[in-house]
Amino acid sequence: MSMPYRFLSSLTLCLLLQAVSSAAGVLPGASVDMGRKTYTDKCLSCHGDIDNPILPQIFVGRNNPTVIRGAFTSVSQMRADTTLAKLTDADVSNLAIFLAKSNTTDSDRVFDWGQKSFPSLLVGPVQSGTLSGYYFRLYTGSQVYIATQGDASNGGRAFFYAPASGSGILDLGTIQSFLPSAAAAGF
Ligand code: HEC
Image (tube, rainbow, N blue to C red; front, side, top):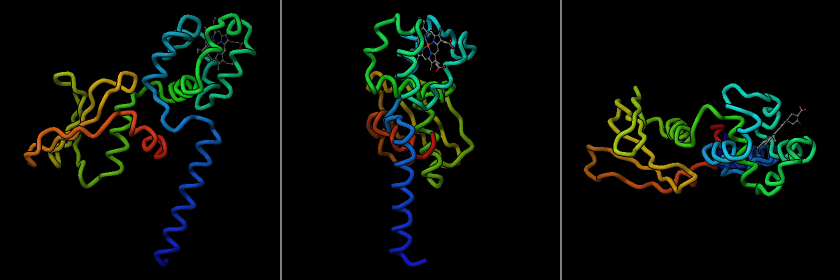
């Protein structure tokens, strides 16, 4: 395949993927951690623990902000809670991705994306843990760390640390800034 053709076909694929993800209506930077906070605040009292929900019908809202927004008015018990209608589109997108990925965190989504995108840099076996407020993965094969501090709801940041490089801990930016890439790659 010639270069320009390859470029064009991957561009087409990108546009197609974008179209697919915007058709679902979840905003590209939607955050599982922020969705978890909003769920605890606004939904938990009726729907219960997400791992064993009292009203499992809620899962029709997985990845689907339109369905969630619709339930705010179509379910009479929900309509009675007038604070629900005040949730922003970003809040509802966060809820939609949380319902789809409630067993993970934004940090793990970003780490999973990094691991898939940079396999020659992030070489396993992987150990993960927490230390001094950092949540990290150590790639024992290449002796590099990726880490986060905080989460997307409080401006949490991502870091890279390769002890052998001598360059110290590198601040990669906010966790939030990586979420569109993680989501586009299916994480
Ligand atoms: C006051 C109680 C209450 C609160 C608060 C509440 N729900 Fe519900 N929700 C219900 C009930 C009851 C049903 C089941 C309706 C039925 O199936 O008859 C339901 C159903 C749903 C459904 C399924 C609707 C459908 O089309 O089948 C979704 C999605 C949903 N809730 C999302 C949420 C989200 C997200 C929140 C928090 C932002 C929330 N709910 C907060 C009571 C509540």
